[in-house]
Image (cartoon, rainbow, N blue to C red):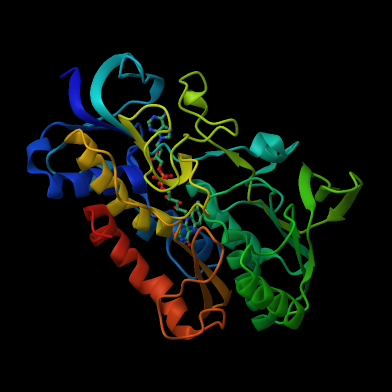
Length: 394
Ligand SMILES: Cc1cc2nc3c(=O)[nH]c(=O)nc-3n(C[C@H](O)[C@H](O)[C@H](O)COP(=O)(O)OP(=O)(O)OC[C@H]3O[C@@H](n4cnc5c(N)ncnc54)[C@H](O)[C@@H]3O)c2cc1C
């Protein structure tokens, strides 16, 4: 195994694989000089998981063996990053020490179920569900089919998360499911956030959806404890500190999340624990041989694969400039997209940038839910993901 590469990429998820593919297609001389460090056997298309949890997608369509997505010209080290030293330009992955000229950090985000007392032990039992873990997504749909009365509670934390609207996707499709089945179930949404959505136009639409569907929703209510046996969820009001306990038949948890803990002592993270990059160039603020994109980066946008798609060309062009000793000149504007299914077959497509103003790419009003947007998410997005984005096309 070689010990030095021109480019080392940490993480073989959406950001890592798409970056490797794009640089290999744009800069031929890096062939065989790109190393991807990734411990997983499989690569996942995570955006489909909420639809799997609501029974409108098959879990099997959401993964491929990792070796199938590693682009030609890149090497894969199947190991977990343990340490990074950006001064010496070295990475330790399991027992292997690798040096680099340039580094891309695409380590994703870490799920923190332990922040919710009792949650980890309850997951997958007593109707306690999550769509954030591959092996539990099907349990969500099983629980939905088996819930005949009582409350279904869907939660969203205050912390930054990936797939920012996955809770709402589950909420609305589950509401549709129980209405179609004519079941006597109350659908409840509890969010630790100040508002439903950070862009006013889509926030207004979501409020209308909640009201039309008679969904009991409350903001500033953070899930802090799950009592699985008693089927009770405890929430804390983030303003007053008061706690409230709600009974459930089914609980769908989006956990709090945080940046990559393996980089804690590397000097690469900002105060909040994200890789500290310039929000336009994606180059590290201190180490000019380091770039980051996607969920582990400090880029102040909503963490989505759709954001990676827009970050990708900018990062690669800037990296190529840096490889020729130039200043990076390309700029990312914070663009991201949040698809929100409002029922099976209808979807709002929120698109916006750093200034939190809509930047819609169709001639339609994307705050109105439409069949075409749902079909796009369900049928087109997976094709674009596997055959364009992972191949480095944005
Ligand atoms: C339930 C859900 C719904 C979502 N819905 C949408 C949606 O509708 N639309 C959308 O655009 N996006 C959605 N997303 C978000 C999207 O999947 C992510 O934003 C995207 O995958 C980010 O890419 P990334 O490369 O930063 O992280 P990831 O794709 O998560 O990749 C991170 C990689 O780093 C690896 N890694 C972790 N630790 C180490 C280590 N120590 N050493 C080496 N490798 C490591 C991991 O194994 C992983 O392969 C959703 C996500 C989820 C979970």
